Length: 174
Ligand code: ADP
Image (cartoon, rainbow, N blue to C red):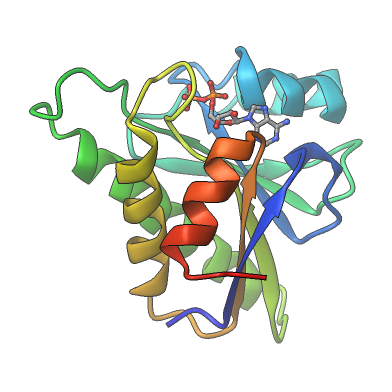
C-alpha cells in the first residue's frame, strides 16, 4: 500500500515534488499534450538526454533529470494507444504505473530518502484515447496495490472531468 494518495487539478509541470511522470511516446523525443508541456518547460537539455535512451516500449518507463522544472526527476512512460480494448491496452496501462512506481522506489532507495512524492498525469487518456473512467480505475487500483509504503502519489488532472472522475473513484467529497 502506498503512503498517501491525493488528487490535484492543474498543470503537472509546475509541481515541486520528487518525481513527475510523463505520458510520452515511443521515441521519447517529445510530442503533444503533457509530453509537449514537460519538454517545453524543462528545456532542450531534456531532449538531449532522452535522445541517448534509445526510445521506450509501451508500458515501460525510463527516468531522466528534470532540468528547468522544479521537480527532481522525470519518469517517462509510454501508455497504450487505445484501439478496442482487445489489444492488451489495460495490461499495458497497468504496466506504466507498475514500472513507474518501481523506478520511483529505486530512486528513493538510491538517494536514502525516507519518503518521496510522485505525480502522475492521466496516462493515455488524451491523444491515445483510453476511456477515462477505466483508465482512472486502473491507475488507482495499480498504485493502491503496490507495496511501496514510502511513496506518496498525486494524480494530477488537467481537465475538470478527470478531476471529477478521480475524486469520485477515491470517494473524496470535500
Ligand atoms: P496520451 O498520449 O498518453 O493520451 P496526452 O498528453 O494527450 O497523453 O494526454 C494525457 C493526459 O494529460 C490528458 O488527460 C491531458 O488532459 C493531460 N495533460 C495535458 N497537459 C497536461 C499538463 N500540463 N499537466 C497535467 N496533465 C496534462
